[in-house]
Image: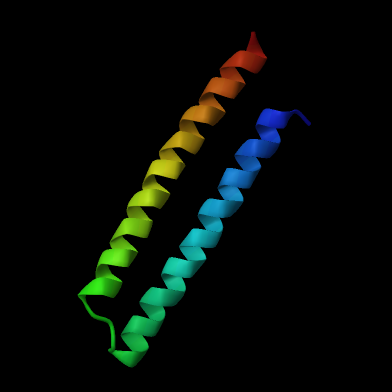
Length: 70
């Protein structure tokens, strides 16, 4: 395996881990009903970060596959 592939897998794992954190936070907010605007803003920021990383991951995969096909 090449380095690009391992780096992309690492980013994928990080994104999945962040999704689990967000899911746990949202579930606890629904169960306890104790979330405030701060929690809501933090969830929004993490989801924005995940969206940016997902786009970067997609672009990197497309770029590396195009480079490998040449």
